[in-house]
Length: 98
Image (tube, rainbow, N blue to C red; front, side, top):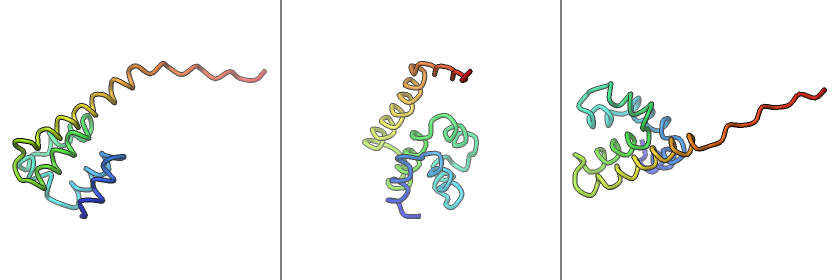
């Protein structure tokens, strides 16, 4: 799978991109030592972090040094999306016409 396509897809749909990498490649299995639970939890709760970790592992080998900077940025993006959703005011109920 083309790395540029995965990055572009992952920017807007990280869960879909990670799922495609998981189904059509072995990068997720290699990054997580053939474990399935941690990538599944990452897919559900921290999709950007998991996707960036897999991509860094895919491109650079074991994630170390400056590659952790990108993983941390992705973690901040995941957490900020949860914070923004929690701060959003609830929508007002729709009035029905009489």
